[in-house]
Length: 489
Image (tube, rainbow, N blue to C red; front, top):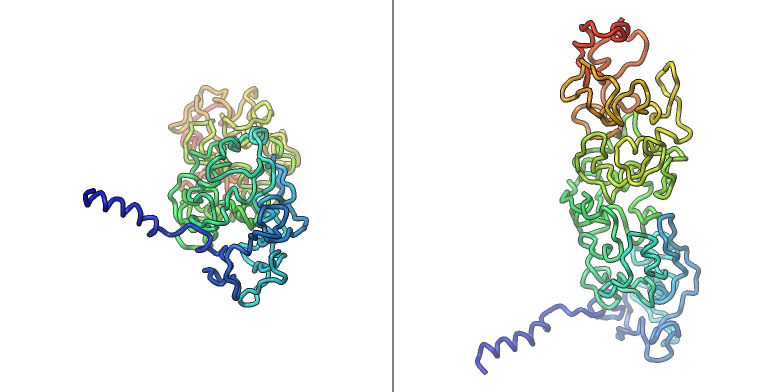
């Protein structure tokens, strides 16, 4: 055997010895006196005893050395889950015998008295590892994950594909789908890395997700204000992915496991100019806004297409799993409002919308409890769907081109064949403001000033909203039509 071959063989034998050992010994689950963590026994040298015993084990699981807490837990529940979590069982029950904070860590079946811990610790100390008996802010466990469930949900992986590191236990999803108690290569004993939400994607296959900015954006936090990623080790939007908004444990917003409650705080963590380029939070502080602050806990993703309880939340207009920067010609919906529900020109709920106006019609057309128009009109009408009906004698061209084929005041690029967006008039004030009707200094969230009071002295500024599309010189100084002359007087 030549020397090079001997060196190759020796390298093959030595490399595994040089790699960090992947065993419970080097993790905080080693609760013995030799453990690396701060929560550990004062003198007990056995490592496995805190979970396992060869004799007198608990009947729930082979060689299990801990008692069943025997408690009723508050379970996760939301309108958007088709799963039916039951009281914890299987591996989840084993984990909770330490992690619900009710049983002493040193209380094992094979010892007549609890094993003492350093610093007088008995139960799991407060913190992320202590889930308590309230599991409503934690990812659901102990539910049957079947092909039927996956099909009913529409955005879950087929359980037949879960044969790798993320797997089921007796056809149930348990803690061990995400956590391996004996190995900790990714922190938190995770079975798969959470970088770019790789772990989440094993089960959750969200529509639109592959193209959304929340998956792809390289944006970072500028260090101002609150850290949007205080609970993760990652520093870009794309690396945090799902965890930009969600937490699998100890979620601030229990419904749908959001980082925060109220709902808008999950968006404004980044959309305040400190991560995303545009400062939407500042726009929402203006006098006239879609007020996301006034009501909390009213919005529900499963609510009817025609909004029945008046409210506004960011997710009424934006699908966080779909939103992206993708321009579209009027009247089509652009990428920022992709994948949301609305109401079409016939008053029928649609999901998803095809046109921008369908989103606006969801609240501003047939929904109840709309306030009267602040502008006095001959015909009072607060259903904008009827106002823009293309069967009307005239209308602004929101759904289709207007009826008038001779509008000499139009400024380029507008023509009589043009179609416009609702947001061409209703948007944050100023030419450089973020797109969309988030907030304005002008009533009705108008982009520019538009006076409606009688006897207002005409000026460019007073009617700038109109003069963004219509030439003032043509309107003021042209002979124009009879109607134009009368309005000018």
